[in-house]
Amino acid sequence: MKRYLLILAAACALIAGSNACTPKQPAEGTAAVQNDSNTPLHLLQPDYKIPYGVPAREDVKAALDRILKFVDKETPWQPGADGTVPRGAFRLTSYEWGVTYAAMLAAAASTGDKAYTEYTYNRHAFLAADAEEFREGKAPEGKRPTVTLRPRALDDCGAICVSMIKDQVAHPELNLRPLIDLYADYIMNKEFRLQDGTLARNRPQLNTVWLDDMFMGIPALAWYGKLTGDKKYYDEAVRQIRLFKEKMWVPEKNLFRHGWVEAMDEHPAFHWGRANGWAVLTMCDVLDALPQDYPGRAEVLDLYRKHVKGLCALQSGEGFWHQLLDRSDSYLESSATAIYAYCIAHGVCEGWLNPLEYGPAALLAWDAVSTVIDEEGMVHGTCVGTGMAFDPTFYYYRPVSPYAAHAYGPAIFAGAEVIRLLEKYHPQMNDSAIQFYYEDFSDKGPIFSVK
Image (tube, rainbow, N blue to C red; front, side):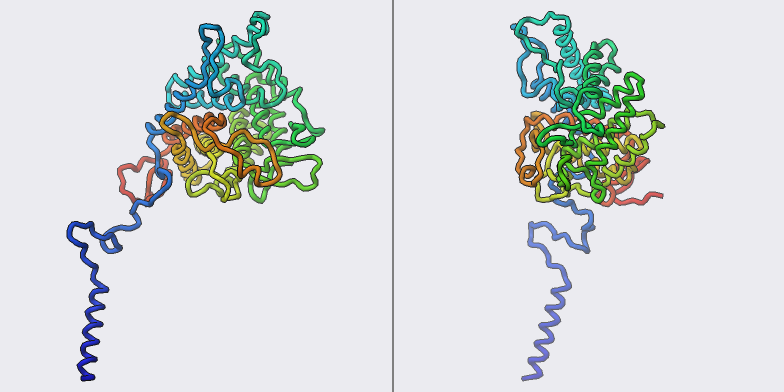
């Protein structure tokens, strides 16, 4: 009996072992189970939260077209029957819209679509005519100028000055030069500064330096130097970048702090996403404006590269960056992500960055931005206008709104430069990952080697 039980146990074990090694057959009418022996599992499609991959040029252009249609409707410039311009959702002369005007010109250059040129041209022409009416004393009594004729802060004039310079160069018939000269003079000679010359403000504390003001003031100086040929504006742009670096740069993180207050012994480092965006966009603009061999340009380029390295180290798995860059429990924010998408793509296109290293990060950022552009052309997930604080809660709980104007220029810039990137290089999926190539390998399979 004992011998019989041993034989029976051995037989059961043999049967069990056989079943363990033989794949179970799926029930009739069900799909076969994918496993290591019948499927190359490394090619299975992950459940991405964003459309990870190489975007099609036509899809990028379609996203830009939706934004153009939306903002065109929401920024009317032609007077109605009563002689006044209807009010849209966005102001025509905000610093955010200065970014938008410049971005439209970039989109026109990369897509060849004149609708983007016309968007900026028409509004710049209207602003120039409106300002001229006031200068000549022909404005009706009680009417206020649409454009700022007496700037009181860098926000009033820096970004729109850059867009006007770029448009004036492209279209000499525009009468933008009086406004350009007015704004450049304010930035160079009238804005409040620290004793060492750093562009500054007296809020929220006396003698405060805002990282935002790198963008609000410095690119206009560089582009005015390019417009006039006067090197003192180039010199001042480079000097200001050095001054901001001395106070705001955190080398161990390759990031900028948002604020610096002269009265502080220690300077808290809150790495706000959009302010770091303004900083890296500043360096892109200055590098574009400065002559290639200009003294100090190499120093700006080195800082730009270090900043991009620091930023890319903190890109999230969804392609976005966080509201506070180094705090992954803060929310994912759209406007900073769009600025980084542009600045990284621009660096690759201009040869400042290696496309193999940084091209995938730029496309991933655009893929993320594309998910927050709705069918109407509104851009979601953007932090509203933001002051300065020295505690995290202020930044964590800033509201977001599709009417925060900060997103639209950066999103257009990003799409425009991604189109340029797609045309200059040959990104392709290889082993399920975005890879950049100098040659077209689109006829090869999903996994290939390059000799």
